[in-house]
Image (tube, rainbow, N blue to C red; front, side, top):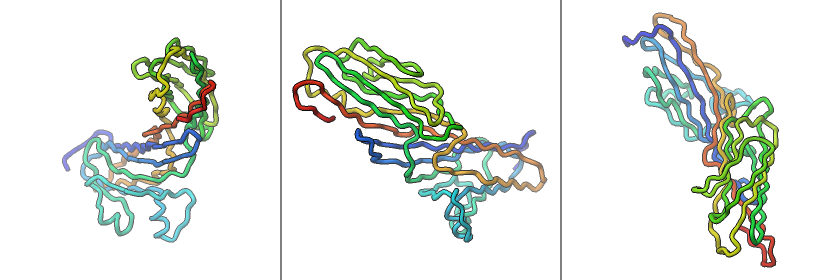
Length: 274
């Protein structure tokens, strides 16, 4: 109670992780959103706070309808939240501890399209393997994904890499046997193409397990939540009546985000799908 700050502020980070598994044919096999709200409190005394979210259950309980509400599941709070009040009225009220802490976590089953869609066509020949990778952003134009990293598995015995891309840089991680395509800034509603070419030994194992691995995508989209979760208000009440500033930031990041691969063999033997 005796804590005093020269500047009374509280920072909220709404961070969502997109988990996604896509088949080689382009079917979404699994998709979910794991969300967390992190807080960093620099508020003097023992202020009472009330947080308002666009919570679907709360709106429906009050007989109100809003298309922009979100149906959150598996909601868990920091111990500072009055759980009984939330259970009865969906009101989120609390006295925050000083400093940084994880305030809340939630989960949503996602029915939206993957944020970054990657299509990978692979053709193998007796002494080489060729890749055509297409990446498309499915979010709105006003948003931009930063530090996009697309990791494509290549055979363990591949060599002599050659790359050509419409944007970004491409490299070869020999230890992981991965072709890494890095795009620093990926605006919404854009599509980019990358081609890769590797040599293969003339004698090799037909049952090569290296291509059983999935393509992996990493990214971060600031000022954006895939679920549409919004902080509607944060009311701060303290007996001395000081004015406090709440700051809110939204970020969406990849979670476990993988796309399975299919392989086309250009040889007389029957094609085998991996």
